[in-house]
Amino acid sequence: YSQLFMFEYAGNEAYTDNNFAIYFSSIHRLLHVDHPDFEHGHVVGDLTYIKPSASFKGFEPSSEIILPVVFEYWSVQESDKMPRFFVVDSRDDSTAVIPNTDTEDLHDFVI
Image 1 (cartoon, rainbow, N blue to C red):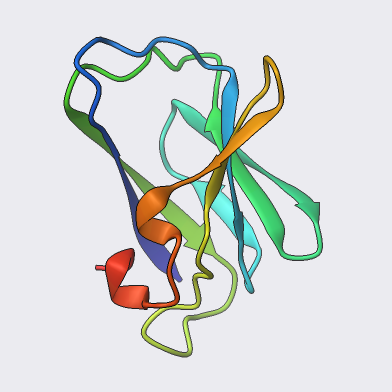
Image 2: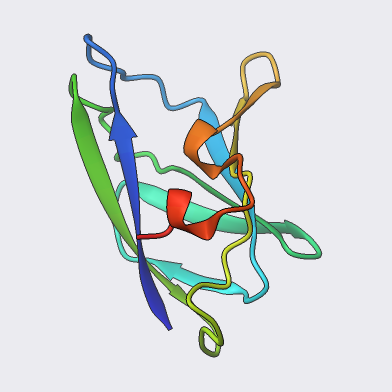
């Protein structure tokens, strides 16, 4: 099944660093990210990540990026996405939960 991931960058300056990955739990295996600037990988169990590819040029101030993604099988509920996506900065391995996903209410992060 297909979904759209929308990431909003709220910064006032361009963000050109590509040393990050966004991790999330997924019941279904991520098969494809249909965007040339991002790639994906499987860690273990249901843990998956999306990270910038070599062609990533960054985020412009106050911009958003939409990633079409394809998962195996199908969604059996409104969404099979788990809460608490988090970002890992590969320069120092610091982490941060993406705020709107830090909830048990799917409607806070699934549109």
